[in-house]
Structures are given as C-alpha cells and as structure tokens.
Image (cartoon, rainbow, N blue to C red; front, side, top):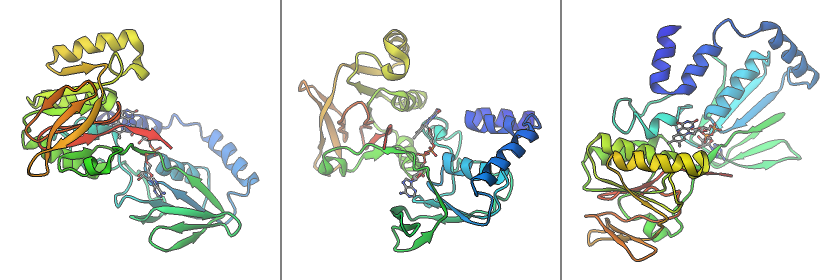
Length: 302
Ligand SMILES: Cc1cc2nc3c(=O)[nH]c(=O)nc-3n(C[C@H](O)[C@H](O)[C@H](O)COP(=O)(O)OP(=O)(O)OC[C@H]3O[C@@H](n4cnc5c(N)ncnc54)[C@H](O)[C@@H]3O)c2cc1C
C-alpha cells in the first residue's frame, strides 16, 4: 500500500486518494445502506445505465455503482479513443517526459463495463430513453448520467487557431503534440493565460531551459484561485524563476510567418513579441507557445 501511495503521489494526487480509499477503512455497512437506497430507486433491478464521458467522473461513477451492488448493464461512452486517464500530469511530468502520456487511471477490478470509446454522445431522446451517438449508432437506457467534464476554450479566430504551432492542452493527444514541440527546443514559448495550467507549463519550460513568456490579463497570476495577495507573491516567484511575466496584458492576434507557422504574438497595446514562428492570443485561457507552436490549456465549464 505504501509503495502504491508513493508512486501515486509522484504521478498524481488523484491516484494517491484512490489508493487510500481502497484500504479497509471504508465502512462496509455504509455500502450496504447505500445499496439499499439504490434498490429503493430501482437502480438495482436489471436495467441499463449509460454514462456519457469516460474520464475521472465517469469511471468513478461506474465503480461506485458496482460498489453499491448494481449488476445491470453499464455502458461508458467516451468521445476520446482512450480509456479513462489522469489529466493533471499532462501539464507537469508528461511535458518534461518524466511520465509517458499514458496516464491511464487505475481500474482495480473488472467492472464489467461495455466501453464505447471514440464516438461522442450527441443527443438524447427523452421519450424513447435513447442516446444518439455521433457515429450514427444509438443506445437505449434506463438511467443516463452526464459526466462530460470541461473542454478547452477554442481560440475565437479560426484562421489564427489553425496556424501551425497553435496547440491546445486539454487531453492526452494535445499533451503528446506539445511534448514533441517542447523536445524540439523552441526559441521562445509564449503562454497566454497565467492560470494554473499556464504557470505549470511555464515551469516545465524553465526546467527544460526554454525561454518563456506568460501573457496574463489579470494583475496577478492565478488570481481566481489564489486571490490578489498570494497571486502577487507568486508573480515574484515566477519571475525569479526566469519567466517573462506580462501582467495586465492581452493578446490581440496571432501572426503567421511565410511558412504559415506561428511568427509573433501582438498584444492589445501593440507590443509585438517576436518569436521565430510564434503568435498567441486570447484571454487568460490561451497558452501560446512560440516557435514553432502555440497551445492553450485551461478549460471552461459547459
Ligand atoms: C492539463 C490539466 C491539468 C490539470 N491539473 C490538475 C491538478 O493539478 N489538480 C486538479 O485538481 N485538477 C487538475 N486538472 C483538472 C482535472 O483534470 C479535472 O478536474 C478532471 O479531469 C475532471 O474530470 P471529469 O471526469 O469531470 O471531466 P473530464 O476529465 O473533462 O472528462 C470528460 C470526458 O468526457 C468526454 N466527453 C465530452 N463530451 C462528450 C460527449 N458528448 N460524449 C462522450 N464523451 C464526451 C471528454 O472528451 C472527456 O474525456 C487538470 C486539468 C488539465 C486539463
């Protein structure tokens, strides 16, 4: 158990919590009570529960249903092709290659899940009790759980968003692309958005010896999470770490160079941050990586 927890802490706190919860500390009588509650709601009778979103919440829900004695069909729909994985390491150890992009969540036992990966749920027929899938298929359900999480905010100008070197960091595939670009030693990485994920990416860049700029529209980084005072302290720490931190600044547009790759980020006050191939933009949600790419990483709730 100790080994498991130590490995988990290294990779991600979520795994550590899971390792602890798997211990005999869980009160079995509470599980029985909950199972009885499920039966009252007719969850325990043969039926089909369909979950949209095959990530942390979807998998946890599936485990909990089985823990509570649900024996019916359990279907997990995921629009990504991957089985459930941890996102936190994607902006940390994965970028510096201390972990591979395979951060699959542990599945301690066979949950007898009918996996439907690689096709999004795109509609619900509430009368018929049917989920429509993006691949044209359909699934009948008795109960339906939506666990579709959050998604990255797209850069609002599609022509700039599609410039080579503009990347999104939200999932495993984006992290893989970002990791490859970082390994190619870009001249400067410009990150638009000094929230947690932006600052984590900046930290990885410095660890790899890369020049990095954060463009943040707020007066301090991570202000929504940390507040003004601690945010101001963090600004000092981040600058001490060698990050070019531009506060109260916003990116106006991303410029492409001759080879249609990112060339520069133009700030709202007209400042041009030249990079060989980089441009960035957006509110505090966009992470722009100069030469030769841009990425944005944080997400917005649905
Ligand atoms: C780079 C990164 C770093 C992070 N670091 C931390 C951290 O250090 N600490 C922390 O506490 N949190 C962190 N988070 C946040 C944490 O990962 C999320 O809170 C967690 O992933 C939420 O899990 P979820 O299952 O609710 O949603 P998500 O993980 O967003 O999963 C939702 C899933 O549903 C899928 N989906 C969406 N629509 C559909 C559809 N119509 N049909 C089928 N599937 C669909 C999505 O593709 C996705 O796979 C980080 C997030 C990111 C992106």
